[in-house]
Image 1 (cartoon, rainbow, N blue to C red):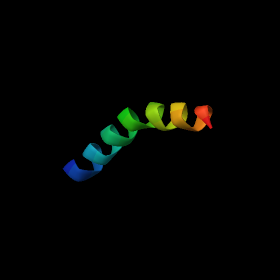
Image 2 (tube, helix red, strand yellow):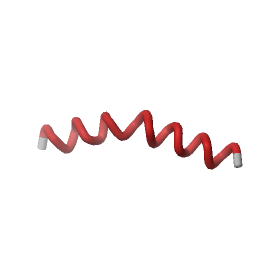
Image 3 (cartoon, rainbow, N blue to C red):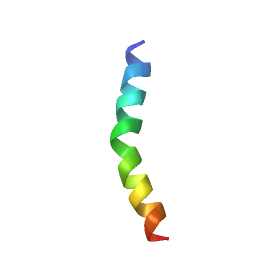
Length: 25
């Protein structure tokens, strides 16, 4: 369960960076 929450928090923190990188291209 802890790994699931960790994965969710990481994806939530990383998603804005991915969106900004995609918007650059």
